Length: 455
Image (cartoon, rainbow, N blue to C red; front, side, top):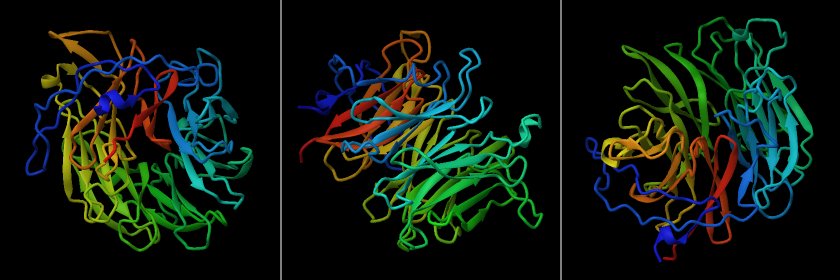
């Protein structure tokens, strides 16, 4: 039985068009004219298969954040944090963060925003067990928080709150120390980098323009002790760059010092505007380990932490959602060299892909080759046949590619106009014989389960 027939969707999937791999320089790829996988049989979703958040979150806003967290309801299945980090004036509801059961799709608890005008939930992160009660804590970032509501919106400090995984209670909170910091734009759990027995974490302030001594910066990242909440080390982004840490992820131990490291994105001034600049830094000292850039004017997506080239070092995956030939670039965690590209080819595929790779994730091995797979999302995707769109707008699609070879393994597309399937995508752990990913749409969250092939 092929992988497509084994695919168990928590959402009915249709479609016959997919991006292809394209040769680029000396980077290895598969052929671009590979045969498309067979069309999936439609599945009748069970009541808990489609997690509908319309009554729990604010609908009609294309900015849901999703983040897997520990099994907080103790049912043996990973649970999920979901947010709509922009207030919806039409519905007159405040922003909120909801904890959802990964097994039943039921709401476990809700964290309402402290105030209506905020970006509460723009960053979400699982932190590890900070208070040693057996359940991982989680953090909620609100980079739009400001102490005085009447001040200029550009002068927001930002804030981060840390909550108990057991009952959601507030354990601690912190805010930016300077107006305009946007503290909490990104948060990353790092594991125990200071070796005191408690997991640690990093928080970015991408709009911090000066350090404590008055020198200009391109942003600031602070690594915090999970035990004391004090700052262990800081990464001061070079002032040649801007918005340092607007996107940030833990990538595993790339420098082999026994502690997880950090990848962060900045914007570099360029003749055509601003191009993405990526740097990987030590989780222990904050020291830069290697950098990467690409001559395109676009913000990038990041993921990593899995070894995709079997060299014993976790690698970094970058989504580059340019208008023409958007791509995913796999970088060696060891030195930042480019291993492979997966490139969208809208003209060949016969479809419009305007934001391919705007969200990416790694998931457990599906094709039994011992390497994690890559999920690539495009929430504005729509199929075209004969030069005309089959549907109107924002159907959305997610592609699953082999992490080892880049080969297309499968795809899932939205079923109606405006679904926006793939606004965000994240790994959601393994369950039984399946690998799982969580995918957000404009009004829902779906859990896609992919049956693992046997060796």
